[in-house]
Length: 166
Image (cartoon, rainbow, N blue to C red; front, side):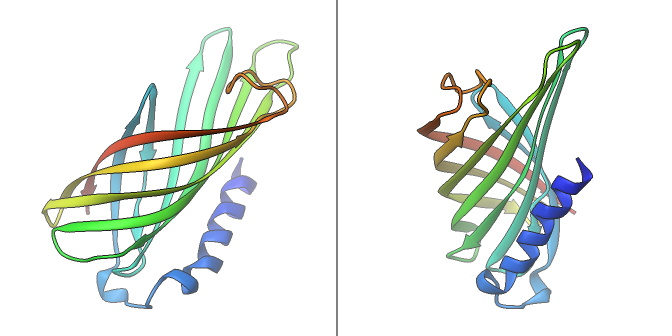
């Protein structure tokens, strides 16, 4: 699992110059909860500049005597405005990993998708936001997560999030 995170963070760091303006004055870190349907993700938005935000994400569920289900990934976000209301565009990359208990083998599904939305700052330390997404999922050959084993699924989605910035 550590290797997966390292790969995601390396890709994000390599992409940073393409999105950011190198302005360390706007560097800040937050802790977000994102609600999207039944999924509740924990996000860690890292503002590299006033234009580039790198957002590692994780979710985890353990079902005793059944399975461990987790998601890890990140989003790259480009802010296209400034002020109290910040519009943005970006792309998300996620791995969904299901490890059943017993003799069953696990599955790993991959999701990529562009998104657009906005974040409103009530205070320097607190914001809420919304996103509209297009998700492209590639399912593992035995996965039932998206109802299409070994196939590709494309769907639209929305998310709402609240963030506390340190």
